[in-house]
Image 1 (cartoon, rainbow, N blue to C red):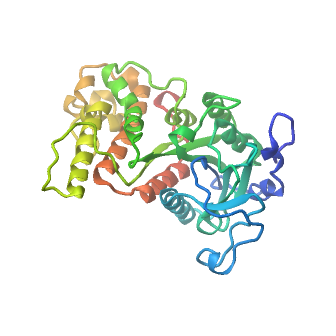
Image 2: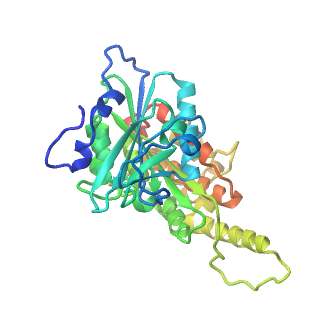
Image 3: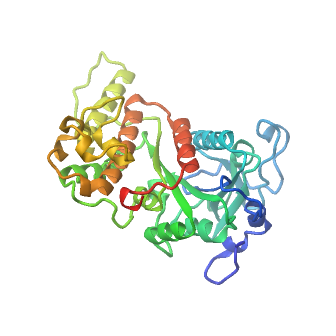
Length: 391
């Protein structure tokens, strides 16, 4: 259905006009391989970069290629997404379009007026992220987080085709990703599933911010919980983005934003002969090792073969517990009856993958946003992921 006009939603819904029809028009001849993707972007921490103007950008102010993506109206400013988000979305889009010609992409984000009111912006990305999504129009109050209510708008207010694969990708920092609103994260995940929509998410972790310690530690919470008590089901009420996307059957990734500036948690004697860069590298290396132990990732693997252990094989269904050697399992689960734990193992392997990937990016100081975009595209193209008990 196109956006409805009822008292339960603010002016953001009423602002959706014919664009909602243009993006997801019902197509009678739609094939099963048709893919529709709505990207919900957290704009709460984007900084206004341009003065208010009522004129379109032109000439030297236009982006490369000459295409003018947006016209900033009175009380608005055009801003750019962070380089990491841009690279991830460009890679995501390119991978999707390379794999399938029948892909529809839309972008949803929020702008806040000076009086605090919020308005959802909707863009058709048929021309591509590089041209249309490179600059976003925010209000005088800046942007807004990708709350559960904004995701719910994408679930219920966009006119999804009946015979397509439907996906929502939410990108943002933890403080703005799936934050509570009129409804709950669990409710959004269930409503999406009921409509055949699969949720995916990418969380930005800023390596140049003190807060990344708690963010990485939280990522590893499920890893530690499984190792401490393997029989504890991790597929609980989804209060975190990873659980919500897993419940929906989607995927969760982390984009590490490079730029580490911390001096570490532990006191060290100053080495007057070492350069600032050497001290910085030592600090980062020590912090990553600290986090490996704190998250439980250091002891979360059995013997590896081509980067995989026995739990990977169980999670994908290529092996049964009786076919595994004890050495291929983490010590914490050796001797456990694994057959009843396949759902928890599937969940654990996903948590371990995300945590290990984030730590590796921190350790190597690699901007992996393009690789994350490719992984998200592969997950979006694929079928809904189901735990063993629902296969």
